[in-house]
Amino acid sequence: MIIAQRLDIIERSDPPPIAYRVAFVCTHPVQYVAPLFAYLSKYSNIEVTALYLSDFSIRGEHDRGFGQSIKWDIDLLQGYKSQFLGSAAARRKIGGFFSMVGPQLWGAIRGGEFDAVVIHGHNLAAHHVALMAAKSTKCLTFARAETHLGLKRSAWRELLRTPLLKMWYKLFDGFLAIGSRNSRYFAAMSIPQENIFLMPYAVDNDRFLSAAEEAHGNRQATRRRLGIEGNAPAILFAAKFDYRKRPSDLVEAFSLLQRQGVQAYLVMAGSGVLERQLKTMVADRGIRDVVFPGFINQAELPDVYAACDVFVLPSENEPWGLTVNEAMCAGLPVVASQEIGCVEDLVHDGENGATFTAGDVNGLAAALHPILVDSDFRAKCRASSLARIRNWSYRECAIGLRKALEAKLP
Image (cartoon, rainbow, N blue to C red; front, side):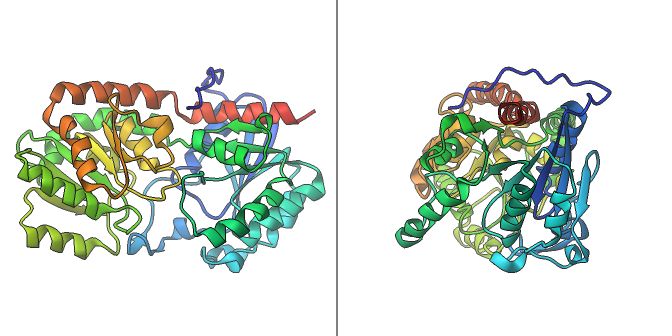
């Protein structure tokens, strides 16, 4: 596990003098990343400019994973500089390699007088345009990626992918690791350790922590609204209903726990391609006390977290899992599959939850059992989740990015 760096970002009312100007190349405004840009611009000496290829998350677009139109209910543009690149930004959608080319990146980066450009990914033509533009100005280039060595790919794809990515990464000056597993992935790509800097994958802890504290005062009202009766512990799943997230494993495990006499509720928050299948499974098998509140937007999420008692993410092939960060801000114990990218840094067996092998329904049920039946253990896990997540925040992101800039700029 990467040890969190000592905090030396001072949160103040007035932004500090600008020392560095950094551009982040982004496909679209994202609810997890936009608050980070605002934090960096306010509390660090880094001025962020987000170069957005599309505005689909602002205007609202059909999300195939959720199976419905999604428009986030928090401001994704406040507190930092941003540019939407060309009139095509109103039409672009993420698809194949050429779905986002972004020729406007060339002028935006060359004329931006940036000290560094951060490129997240390699799978779009725009990423390559951005890298060439940055190289032509001789400003620093940093790579960020979500991947880790535990993600499963076909043998032939991995055979082609690894040498190509090693060539791609040789063009960068530094690498911003989102966690321990991601750091080892970069090392496996023959990147020297001194070029890898921790910029952890984090959520807006301040918003979620304060909202969760307030929401706890409305816990019983929210539970009634969700259909949870009495004081039985509630298990929460909050993600897309798709095959990779494996929501049916949790329903199966919950059914097994019921047959063992465990009293609990299961809250399946979300939507997606498996929604009808999941509801049919619950009805056909007579599984009691399962509620489906539907898709929950960002502003309402803290209420739902506060109403529940344990969070479960049973995914396979999961690069990180930022919903785990959110749940920990609400003080929830976490049960997660060992394959999830965040587990090594955030979820420790017996401390703030438990882990299991993805696809092992019996293992999932066994991981949940002690948390559900032992209120003292739940309280211990709650305290541990809160303590751990407080040191995995935007402050650590600011420290990591500044260390990278200071190490690489003359």
